[in-house]
Image (cartoon, rainbow, N blue to C red; front, side, top):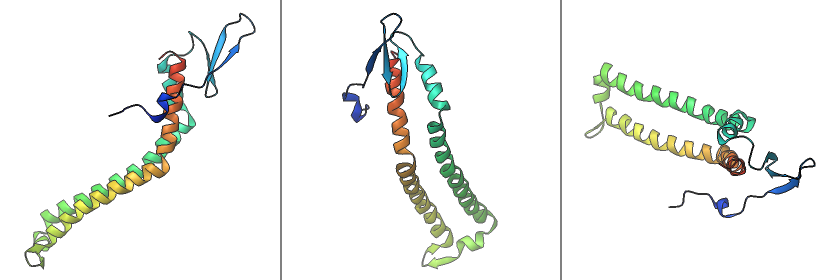
Amino acid sequence: MRLDGPRDDAPVPRQEEPDSADGSTTATVSGWSAPRGGGPSSADIYLEVQRSEAFQEVRRRYRRFVGPATAAFLVWYLAYVVTAVTAPGLMARPVAGAVNVAMVVGLGQFLTTFLLTGAYARHARLRRDRAALDLRWETQEMTRGAGR
């Protein structure tokens, strides 16, 4: 199983620019430049990325989906539990043969779990994955430039 990405085999695009003062070079990666052998540490780079607007947008999109989805599912689950405890007669009412309301609603819980998982995967694919992958590549390129 490969844990690296498809762009890991390609060399990091660097442009070397001579400094006017001492003839040393500067590595430029994704619009971010740091002197060779110096520059910010990996921790500084990750903090910079975390503060960036692109990262904050990915987090906002994540929270906009996960917060309401979690709340809705919890309410649905707790309604099932509370109804089972407070209205056992309703839950025991037969629907078809030996199948009662509690069984139908319990199966609905499983169905809801699968539907919610599919909705989460779709939301991630359409609204977050591309931006998160771009951030990942940019961060990896910057940390390579910092000497890890």
